[in-house]
Image (tube, rainbow, N blue to C red; front, side, top):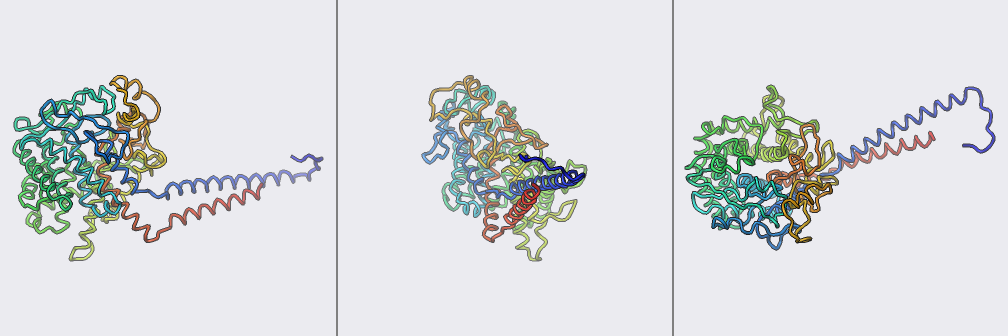
Length: 566
């Protein structure tokens, strides 16, 4: 405000100048807001996703889930030895293995699926994992599981399926180092069969035998020996493991039955041995076991059909000579594999039930509880099949066209389309989502800090070795509102609902509990995406930076206009 005497204004001039100034200020404010919004959005979207860091953190997570006596090179400092008497009551050594999630039960079926997916990623993307400098840690993650499987397979037709009891465990909130809950062990045998568990474990061991074939041939042979025995066990004495072990039904019931696991194991044994008998098994049982009947929209620790179908399709795509005589049946497998992949792409048509749903933010959505397990497994199959198609296109004698996915709706999908969808799901997990929240713990600026995990939510045993009991854990640690004192790096939590909504609350176990089979498929995916991103960086792509510079110039221009208006 002027401190001198005000001059008498010319009639009407104030209204004109004030109106013009007001319009200019309003216009500049709108432009500034719009430019700022564009700049923020561009900065968020163009911020590079560090797949290499995500890969490293993923492998670190498995060290936090270890049970047993931890090695000297353990990289998660807040964890200590646990479960050192597992199997003692039964007279067997069941020390080791992985806790599946935020509790302390060792469930055999999801643990075996976790190792199968780690091994599959290591087989198909070995060069990518090695290029990221994570080959050694990947081998350690696989071997921690397979060492335990060998221990648990005490006789040809005996396998120890579970250690601990879910009911008592879930009534207790303790660190694994303080564990006082039941460590009862449960087994499958000839009189109490578990073909699904035996089949999945056989698949894990067969896949792992391929991984260790060069670096440790003796160990590879041992893994294959156990895999073949377990497959024979599962096939000869058929039945679901949850029919033999009632304690598992409320936690990891085998809803899909055992047929998918036996087909799964047969194809992995064929890949590991090259023996035609295993391929013939998958061909002969294709119809009766549902391998060419089930058209799937999910792939998980329970339902393996989509994985079976992709493995069978791979044989055709790579022109395996042994597969040619089974071509008719394998084509049926391939058609079902492509149904799953087209479902993920949303190109199956129909009334919508033949496609995987999407959240408004683009996340593949299967069901409410721990949906990201289905996202990660889908991302893996998309990434793997993209490579199979690319390899088929390169090697086909007839030139280009072999490596295309033919869906009922829309144009044929190229390998790049599958990879783009896999990348979008990986990016969603890592924070490119409506909440701008990374669902991998410790990755990015914002991630869940109230993860439903006993060990992470209680002060580390090494920092405070005073015993913490079951009820004390609930009262002092579970119920408190502060972030977990220990960071469960690399864990992928259950994730948001169908509307991209997420509540970071320790009570909200459907969304905040992490599981080993959420992260395992992403090891191969992150390795592949990291290698491709590195190659693009080496090629000197800088367009995202130029877009950011253009947005900065826009804001500068608008700021100048605003200054002139003032």
